[in-house]
Image (cartoon, rainbow, N blue to C red; front, top):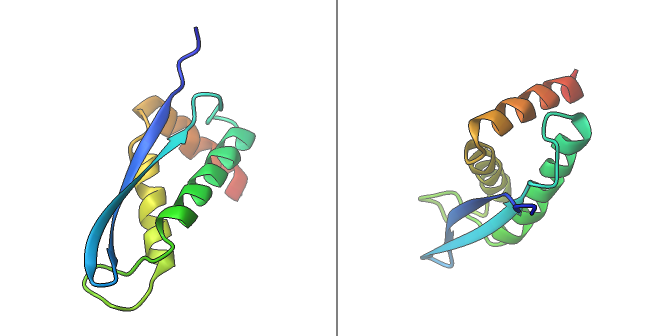
Length: 99
């Protein structure tokens, strides 16, 4: 029996002057995050979730739209929520890709 592993990211966004919380699940159980291909696939899933979560994002305390700030926050939270062994493999694979 295969267990679907996923991380959940929650993003508190200031939308139209009101705070709203949104949540997304990012599956990774079918990926080998210790490989470049797995890390890139996970990055793509993070980007897809971030696009949905950050459509109307504003930096906390500001009325100026800031999707880049929100997308970085989604990425950071997704990686932070990975189990430590998966996070270590992902970090190693990402260093290989960036070189």
